View 1 (cartoon, rainbow, N blue to C red):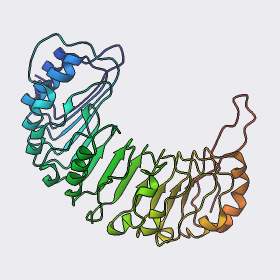
View 2: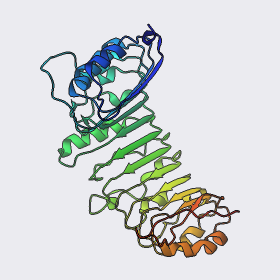
View 3: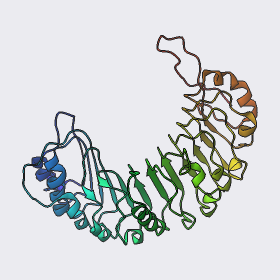
View 4: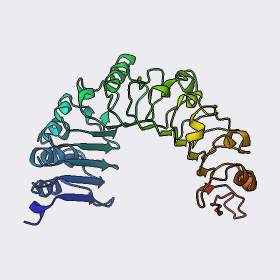
Length: 348
């Protein structure tokens, strides 16, 4: 009786207690659920048939997040409605996030376009994300889109079909693409006037299909862009496209291969308030480049060479706007584990 009255439900099971079909049957009785989050481990029957049952029963669901990893038990041979085949039944859904590491649900179902209220779509693992996106997906009122594990072996025609569909999403406010190995077919974002956040995480930017493939004026058509993340992208220098950003406030070039910092000149430098350069191999903070960021209030240099810790005084003089607690510098550590990093904080 209590389950049927639930509005929100979050289930996170430990490794040795996977979600089962029986669990899904119980959850399916919560007919008034509007938000459901499932994470941890699951057997394969629960992923395919159990989630399919939930899609059939939970018609009031507005938010659905499925995040499972680990070993999936083999199917028992039953042919109940599957998860992928029943997503279209959740017509009230505004937010869908799916990440199934180690599992393959096949291509994104064509009838996902029936989710006419969908505003937030995140498909990190599970579906084959570089299968051409279903025609009409770009016509949904999407505000946030995240696609991950973009495999490099997919045919160029399929990749172009995907980008064409993304280009139709002119109302996007946040676009996140993970593990993209070739940027030559990058979606044209110059029509995304409302785009505020662009994240290219773990995208290879080395070689001809990388950073140099992105046109220098790429960001000029995104007047609302305030946050750009290029984390773990093998960058050896800051990309020239930064110069075309107009109102950038937050920039992350973390996890690269930069030995020196040279920031392209541009309007973005005066609007930048947060800069993340952590986990590079920087030896000196390139004072002229940072000095141009006159409104910088947060700077992260953790994970670089310990000698950067000696630049504390100079950074404080050049960047008087840095806020207490928002400067992170590497420093030497004499522990037997080798160099460790800690935060340096000082008052304004």
